[in-house]
Length: 448
Image (cartoon, rainbow, N blue to C red; front, side, top):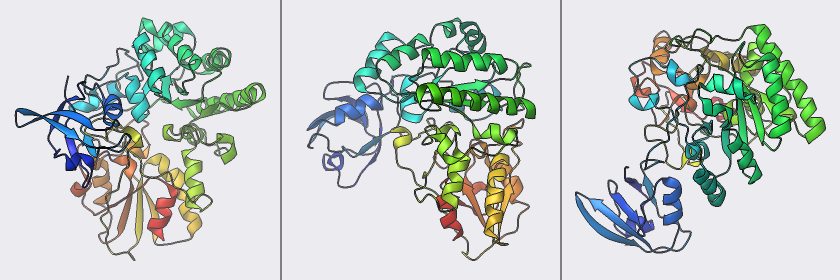
């Protein structure tokens, strides 16, 4: 078990006034050793916090004078101090198994930790969930959580997770819902395994057993060139269209019986099926925007000025590793800005899917000085076309062929803590870039 290590102290904060400095290790807070940032946050929220601090091998007591509820003003290094609960499933479609060799070690860690679900929006299968976990979730109000369902048929779910507990672990989903915990569900659809009749059975099972779900997103599996699973393949156009049709049929069933649509197909499905995106009201408030549900439609509303509140900076994939904000996706984030001359022609860097969304929007501007630059993802290969998985290696290849002196805009979702997944940074690219928040409002402002 590691100790919370202070990485930043806010000027003028109670922590600074008490003498806390970056690098201090906190052995205990008011006599208790916090297991994670959730417990840390609860403990330091009290008035007059007593910290047992280790600095330079020596331990001392630091009393922080503060009011109850007043921010301590100290940021710690990680979200989990004891040990991340790793995943003991062996899903064929797991993207961790499809990563190229030689990446940062932390990226290969599979988690199935409900705490990271609450903090970062990770999905948990609940196969390692316990009574003690349920008690903590309920008593501490750790809601919402994201749960991977994949199939409600016990045999199919066991086969997909390659874990016999997959047949029974959804009982915890029922327990969470019974205790009023908000839960968003996910189904990763694998062709010829849990699509078609199996997907229809899953949507019926959700209606029968888990109708209190806040939302259910249906997403296609991602297949990189590094997958070794023979049964895993990308959807055909017809298969993607069949998923969209089935989801939309069940939306009407849910709407009639529950008064809401509940289930949504990922934007990728509409792109794969060459179908137009649903109207904004069909997304019912975009409850799973972070999982790629309605992201394109939201971007369009923001970019065209129909929505003035942008979704803001977005963390990249694998957002909880490598020193990501311990407070999770709720933590504020900034963007990197490297600006060439403002009147230069503009190139918008994006993935294959992003280019199909952005292209028509940029064309409607009627500006010859703005163009979309699709970046083919050769690093991962396969059917990987989302902008969030773009890496420096591919961006460098494309930018090297682009003219100097232009402005190049890149969505911040490509970066986590200023670093691409391949370990490179914007400073390694052959052209200066501007990193902007991945929303239409931010892009509109960058172009204005």
